[in-house]
Length: 298
Image 1 (cartoon, helix red, strand yellow):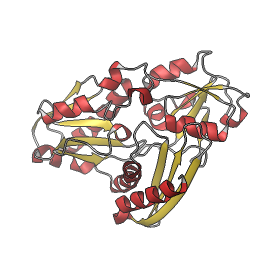
Image 2: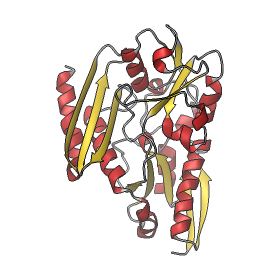
Image 3: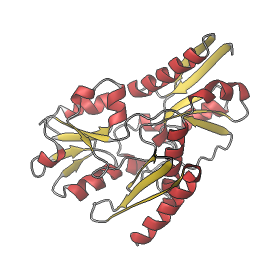
Image 4: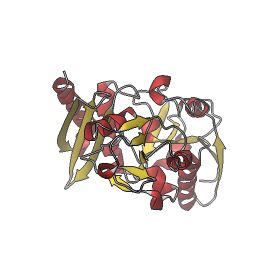
């Protein structure tokens, strides 16, 4: 394919890294195309200091970019998949899912201590209800302190005395080359990730056959199946930023294994479960697990 392709993205360092990575893959597949990256400010960017649950809005980091896509101002868009609402009012968009980075969360501590070795009452930074609930369930003595900002901003804050440690997604830290800052990778048994964490979504308009054909080779079937199950679980629970929900799926020996969690904000009530089944039944597996955990937490 020849021609010019405009990709929309947020302007954060991580968003640009992710978009440039997608651009590199496309250039390798289609050496003759010209790729232009256009940055777009989202509502989530303009409310960078407000805790996400207080904003209470789905599509915080995606709505303005999707609007530019629908308007034909860009050909495709790159998002962190976990930022995309599971139910969008825009029906004329299709997404492919790229190969997933490490889906775990990591602890970064200026004290150089793992989670179990932090002092009693340690201050741990996160703006995620999901992370906060699981931290409280594991260590009820911890003080959870709000932490907003892009990955590099959070890492700078982690060096200040306001925090003894912070918890962030491994994917962003690894993608930006900050692996040496990681104190501890948190195992899934302690900290399940957000549905879709570590995966990227590349969107295009459903009626733009040329762009869809251009980006189609980037779709990674195992990641698509896993994240479909995770996001179906989240959607069936009616979750977003308002309740602590976590999920992770993977294919082992041809079978899709999904584990999930729903918790109270204070971490005193945690419902966990897991299901497995055919990869082709990814969405049904997510809905099944949601029904199980909805009953168990009532």
